[in-house]
Length: 320
Ligand code: F6P
Image (cartoon, rainbow, N blue to C red; front, side, top):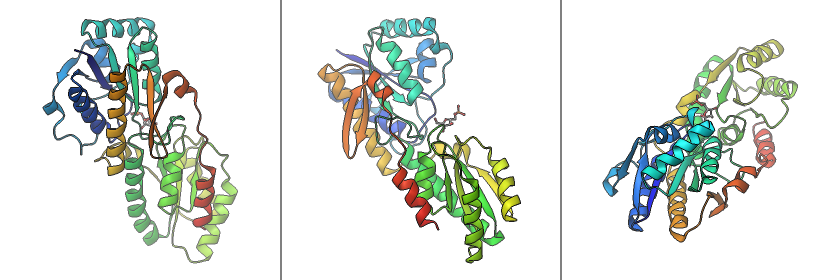
């Protein structure tokens, strides 16, 4: 009987549980044995591995986080660590591994594939920073969480007639900022992919105020070089308006996954197991348009997706 392993790795993302559920249940459907590996590559090195049954994934579809837990493993980054991970998989007779995680987790998987392990990457990260896929699992939920925060912050910013900078996650990728900025009606969006235009930003804040706007919301991606407090000080100095910062942080990583993330996670993890069943090896699963796609893991990691200039431009036009 074919035996597969599954782990979640790197920063957790809403929808990881839906992916674990789909992988476990589809593998059992295809008469495979499934082993859950706790705490990502860290747990793999420690042999923290248990068999999963249909009921092991009951009641998790709607839960944020990951029941398998996750970690960022320094030990696994070394050649010795990778050798130990391969040995551990051999000990448990696991020949295929489904890795749910982001860029770093996929790079780890690629190393394992060089030792003969069949790996399947399911993209789970709120950052949406994997170039080969339009969307990653968790991104949609994170954007919706940011929208909730924008709404609350807008109320208090209006009452106090303030400008507020909301710093969002995303590492070096501005997608959370762009999507939340457009759909949340932010006055300005700052992302690492574009040079900051602080003068234009300040002009917009002043002009908005002259037209009677009670507040300004600025969404700034965490990857933008200028620290939020420094930016707030500059805006205050140039506009004369009280300017506050809110760093949303880990709140963006929690919460029940949206329908869209549950759908994406279920479809992608199902595909990963189907590919294993068919004898494919070392693929990264993604979505382009509404189609579930897969690429060779090494090629996928080289692929770049430029940020959506059209949406960014529209966000700025609509927020005038
Ligand atoms: O990759 C997801 C993410 O939340 C990034 O947006 C953020 O920069 C990073 O993880 C934070 O990592 P940690 O959980 O290690 O603080």
